[in-house]
Length: 166
Image 1 (cartoon, one colour):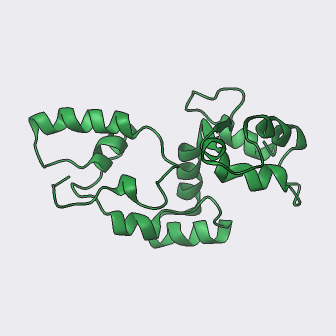
Image 2 (image 1 turned 90 degrees about the horizontal axis):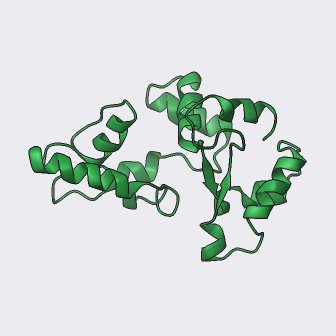
């Protein structure tokens, strides 16, 4: 990332939601030693997960284009379509971004106000053990597991859990 560019990690959808920037920053520092000003942090992070990106950061685009955790399925599909992605691509990307744990502020409303019965009651109760209803900086940033079986593995259990309303 060039000095004049503003990092995407400070984009509104990323603030207090995306973890692991320290790893990306370390990788970027090593790349900068060899190729200064050539590769973006976005490229470093995605390269670690197989994808290759541009050499620039786009905070404004990240602010407008990164989907929100409260977006409806229709909005997610529409946003994906504008980027040339199919609904299948969108589902795969959604799963890759939510494997592991969720910050409490992103799931509290769903686990405490499960009026639509789209979350298993037992799973919601387990999440409530990690996430308290009262909002506070400490509580909102706590993490709740989304995959109780293989939380640290890149596998298809996230999707199996969705089918089981977990």
